[in-house]
Figure (cartoon, helix red, strand yellow):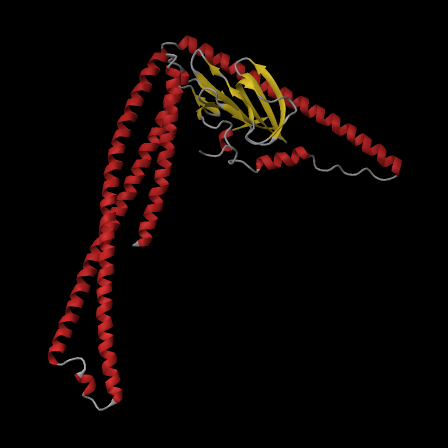
Length: 402
């Protein structure tokens, strides 16, 4: 019974932890949406935030459903255990009553000392005394067993009352969240209709954003190419120096050691799925890869990174130790910082202020700059990329799950 209670407690604790995390995500999404709505801006950004809120609330409803299922299972087990304890208690009481009746009849026939003293055999006297003492202990054990069973039964009934209350609360909360979910879906549909009326303007914005994304990719490619060229030049010079030194000493040129960049790259790659987020608080509203446009059918959006919506003034943080490869300004991305981690790079775009310079060594969690806040539409979002050489990878597979 105690083991079952512990398992139930652990399951409930895990579900409650998950539910609280989802509730915090919903609150954060609502605060971001409020930040956008203060500018009276019915935009694709607002639509994406509503969609993120709907996704989180759907998870909350599912989690509550799981909690209710766990409670139902625990209630059924609890009822069976209560019935077993009640039956056991009745049997123990009946057995004890039989022992008491037998003892009462025995006392009426003779006192406890007479059968002991009436036998001339000392061995018989001892065995009779041991029998009487054993029966007394058995009666005492029966009393203790009844008390223990009664305590367990009381505890079990209290647990059942608690679980019934928890189930009632969970059902009520599930109904409330289901209603809010339906309201948010209607809200999304209403905004979607408004945005479809701005198709010409939105298509222009989409085309411009795609051009800006291509420009950023080219800029990153140029930086990587320049770095590789510089690295080759350094290696060639170092190899020439080693060859000349070896010739002068009459020995063979040593094989160069593994570059530090390779070691750092291996260290970075071993942390897939464990890197911290590039902001302390944020919500992914633009996902990596090719996705359907949130408004227009048969139109897709391609991102080589993710857009993480944030509150005003959020700081961009280095996700791993490395060296700042570049700091530059690019239309559509404001200020951009690139940090090299051996053979990998991380890109932090849409920064208002930059706190680092090219060539600077940075640590995990070091502030790189402040995320830009668009005062016109109330949008603040960090653009974040992870590059394996010149190949973009999904940053969400690298970041720890919140």
